[in-house]
Structures are given as C-alpha cells and as structure tokens.
Length: 115
Image 1 (cartoon, rainbow, N blue to C red):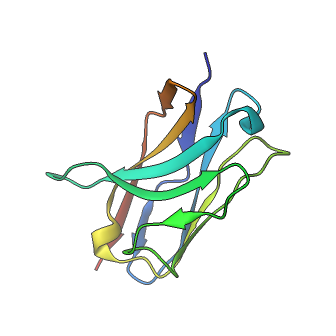
Image 2: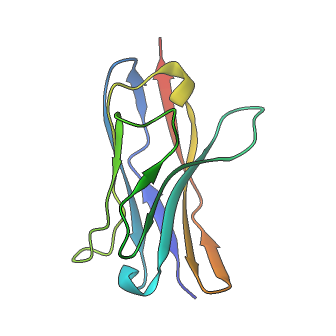
C-alpha cells in the first residue's frame, strides 16, 4: 500500500512563495497520475495541478503562471512551487495518486496566506 506524505505548508504573506512536497513510499514512476488538490474552509476540494507520466503538467486556471508542479523521480517526490501567493490560495493541500483503479490520498498540509 503506497503512502503519500505532504510537507511544506506554512503561514505566508500575500505575494510570497512556498514549496510543498509530497513524498511517496513507492517509486513514483509506478504511479501514473499524481496531483495536488486543495480545500478551502467551507468549500469543496478542488484540483490544483496534475502530472501524468509522459504528459505536460496541467493546472487549474486560478494558479496558471504562479504554480509549478513536477515529478522528481530520483527522490520519489512531487514538489509544488507556489509563487505570488494570494489569500484565496489558503487551504489544506492534498497529494493524490492513482494507478489503475487504486487511489491514495495524503493527509494534507495547511497553507495560509495573509493579506
């Protein structure tokens, strides 16, 4: 059973940057779909970015040009670089992986952006 563990969440001022990381207990090359989701207070969980093996990353319109996701196959991690942060980026950020019909979620890491 693969496990995903997020880290890097923090309190940051608007305009600042954070780098989240998702560490996998298994070689990420064996997890074709890896994504970052987030959930703001009182809102539904939403997709932030996805990286599918062999494809270019895909981003939500709200983060395009500000966030960058990549697969680090050497470290088995999924970093998410977040720049020009806005208060509306506040939420719990979750890592998600899917291989076939098997899905796994991390426990989440809190990101708070103050205005």
